[in-house]
Image 1 (tube, rainbow, N blue to C red):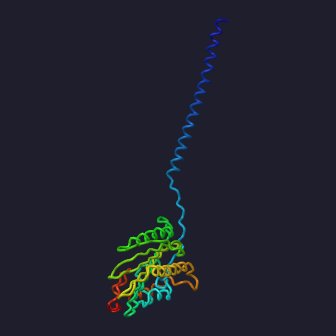
Image 2 (cartoon, helix red, strand yellow):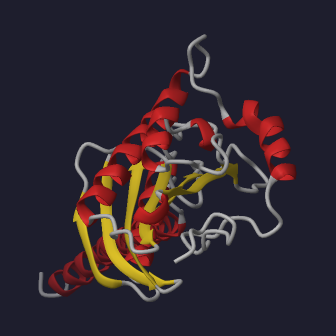
Image 3 (cartoon, helix red, strand yellow):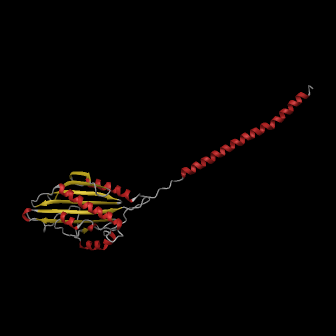
Length: 286
């Protein structure tokens, strides 16, 4: 009886060893599984972080063409703003692609004899922006250019008493910049309207001066004329959206041949923005 008790204890101890080993083995497998899951999760997170998000497609540009700049302002308006214009049909600016950029200008001296003369200069310019996946939508690019053009006009060299104000009712947004400028020994009144419609920026400038004792035109009249012409020019751009219709305004593509003819007829010196002095033949003698 005394010998059987120790023997029984040894048997029970040996039987417990496999149970402990099994428990340890299960615990080890459980830990390994957890590490594997962590590694897989980490790899998945890294892959997700490294993947670049897909950029949304930019919206299409509203306008794919431009109107003929020299017909963008009504003939009667040109006649009213620039009496005795040297070229009734305007002088087209040079452009490598009239569907992207176009311009036109008019100037003339209304000679009143002993009462003096009135000089006027009018110009309009269009710039169209296409939508580009890397650069942004045409409207966004046009908005950026619109802001730059407004700042540029405000900082015009030699400008006196420059002021800027919103010009409601012209395109999606518009700003009118007015100032005085002394040149050719005369005081000029300036008004420039910078407007944006869709993906197109329109810049219209109108200025005038009195010669040989004639009074300088009022700032209010110059601004009013500029706003009227700018509204017409923007309206022509908007009309290009229906270019496929029979009564659509002439597109820049249709006007290329006419523009080339006009270029050949241009004076060698050309017109500069408000810098042309009335020719000696037209300027009345003091």
